[in-house]
Length: 90
Image (tube, rainbow, N blue to C red; front, side, top):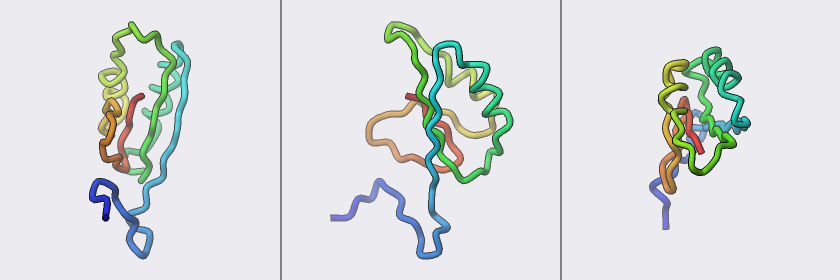
């Protein structure tokens, strides 16, 4: 059975996505903002950001990082399709 929710690389590799994991502690917002403000929007990479926060804390990370990059910034959800040139927050 073919999984239609996953993109498959083309024979020439043109559909290949590189995944970049980025971790930060609760005080790492400035570093993340600096990193994404300097990252080209068309890098061909998908960025998975994990930040250490209290489970009770309402994060504004989507809104804050969206001001620093032209890439879409989303909260990661189970089963979602990961796309290149995007930022996913866990």
